[in-house]
Image (cartoon, rainbow, N blue to C red; front, side, top):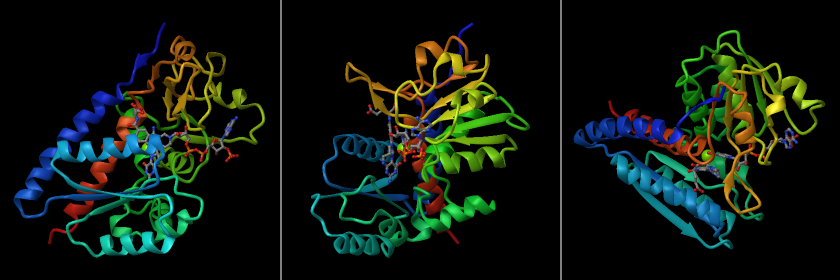
Length: 283
Ligand SMILES: NC(=O)C1=CN([C@@H]2O[C@H](COP(=O)(O)OP(=O)(O)OC[C@H]3O[C@@H](n4cnc5c(N)ncnc54)[C@H](OP(=O)(O)O)[C@@H]3O)[C@@H](O)[C@H]2O)C=CC1
Ligand SMILES: Nc1nc(=O)c2c([nH]1)NC[C@@H]1CN(c3ccc(C(=O)N[C@@H](CCC(=O)O)C(=O)O)cc3)C=[N+]21
Ligand SMILES: [Mg+2]
């Protein structure tokens, strides 16, 4: 038996075309959704992601502004730029690409973004909304993972979900979304003893660590849904996830590839959040 592939590229295209239709309707009413992306420094991976985000906006009829700054930009200057974007009515979403240079406090930057424009869902307010089950912007990567799981038609109710990783941007919000969908959720991390004993029990596994081969075939229950968030490079310099894809696909029921899985969905959900933010400005 081999797993069915969950095609994130195809699903992201479908979502982006739905965004495009709604964006066109909104633009016809005089409100074109707008996203501002700020990149500080020249991290090569960040440059690729940021370019993909700007391109996706253009294709969906959103307008976007990309602000690039040298790595020596002061924190004060960055906060000032964010405040200007907060009060710019043509901008509905603001994204500051992480990681930032070491001299800039990322939490201070995130909290400076207006909650109404926090389309990354990184702010304490957005995190609290999710924790409390209140409406707010969902972090794009876990949001995209939920859409990928939904696309399998596997009902999460009562299922055991294991999240590997507990970052504020991926692992923790992922666990909350799975909980909200009535899964029974286990969160594993670097201090977890015997990771395999947990993952072997899982109907759904989300791997968000940032290390190759964190999940191998012997750690997976036959038929499980496996979502691979990781972005790593293998020995040949090729992009790969946290999951040993070739091995795990022999055991899992469903699996996302890297590339072509979670990454494109992260961008699609960023567009969804930006559109929703713009729609909220209508009377
Ligand atoms: N495709 C996409 O759209 C995105 C991909 N990513 C990728 O996802 C991965 C995770 O990102 P992010 O959450 O930001 O990373 P972080 O480094 O912030 O978090 C990694 C988590 O993995 C845990 N961990 C580390 N080693 C192990 C281990 N051996 N066993 C179990 N858990 C472990 C850490 O535990 P502890 O808390 O104890 O340190 C931590 O909670 C990265 O590869 C990143 O590039 C991220 C965002 C978007
Ligand atoms: N404020 C902020 N918001 C983010 O959402 C954010 C961030 N900072 N910092 C970095 C991470 C990472 N991230 C990705 C986005 C798209 C792909 C993506 O498009 N991946 C493609 C391949 C890309 C490639 O070829 O390198 C894929 O997996 O198929 C990956 C990773 C967003 N992040
Ligand atoms: Mg992402």
